[in-house]
Image (cartoon, rainbow over all chains, first blue to last red; front, side):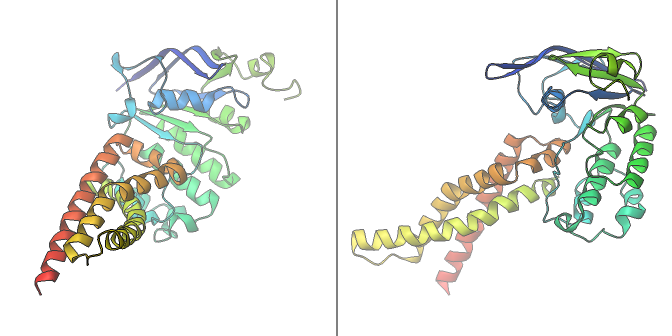
Length: 221
Length: 110
């Protein structure tokens, strides 16, 4: 089934600083949108607003035409990977997976080669890469129509990055995905649509080369 | 369904179970020195329950807010809002407080 996420008129200011000014973003099933922007451009802020966990006075968010105030409250719509580790350090991998067992294929997780050897390990004792891998796999595999990934490649080893990119491509068969990361090479490699957040607004780019035109990448890239 | 709230509820409870006995101790000491009378087990349990359901709970929730707020995103991905977490956890605390009172009154009888 084809789903469509639309966000319009999104504005957000922190004190005097206007971070987002009338942002429009559209995503549909099959899209892997690479959203890039400089530090402090408002990428994480935007994703939190779209997920519904950051308040703003001005926003209009809809999925398949249905208006939503806080999309995360309705299960099965959007899953969101926070840029920082968010799983409780005191819980084991197995316990975390059991919490989500109504939204994931549990048997598929316990067959995963990376997770298999750490199933009984507490999250706090995992390496940074292992815990991030678990979080990404969990978020990507949750039953939802759209996935927002904030810095998914941060702290991940190259070998696992390739696995994650394959997961993203596979999940895009039945989900719309928006991802943002400073590791632009991997973002550009996996994305099939490109956007840049510049001066508080989103510009849709037709090719990777336009990132140079808009000053996100230097010319020799 | 309820088990999805438990990681948060237990986190608040752990802090509460440190705070409330300390608050109860000081409240009991204060009451003894103020009234000059002995305080009964019921009186101690009264102080504990008040602390457990007010300041102890509040400090437990604030501890999570300040030191573990990223973990809210696990609950958000489960479709649980912050307000709902707090309300369910407060209900959980009422149940725990009731059990403690029942156990205390039973212990008093024997």
